[in-house]
Length: 239
Image (cartoon, rainbow, N blue to C red; front, side, top):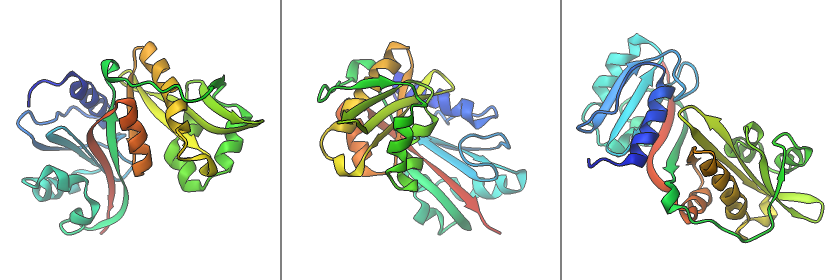
């Protein structure tokens, strides 16, 4: 694969998150390593990250390494983050994902100016109110409760109806977190608040990352200029 600086930066992040020395195979394919400290997945799970034409996989114990390596070797890359197809070859007990992984080069940024965006502290009470207005799944998916940046918000009257910010990740990465109140969706508000959060991340020389499962979230990322480079999947293997 021709050198892609954006892909290289994204891979550096996930190699650091793996918790052990490993690499995305230069000729494509997958590398499997044992890592009890892996941040690719919850503790005790198998973490899979595919970026470009290669993937890395961490397993929690050596007893699983040989099995996972043998099963995954030679599989098409897209199968590695397809939970249904993995169930055909591994005893998968539980799944998180898959989530798309998209990144933004500053020269590709397409900012939005669709609304007035205010800035509030990340622990502002209005954010807690917004999070309480959505389902637990939506609140968990957006990650807004864990931002380390300021929050960028749109109000309707006295109420915050959309907010975005980012959590600082290893490798100078800004992990984007965005949420819009359900009755306000489809109006461009997610793009408006995310645009300001992305701009701040870029100004701080961070690499914006957009990790998402729902299609509407992926569409917002594409509208801002993010490029999907791969996907992440976590699986818990049963007995």
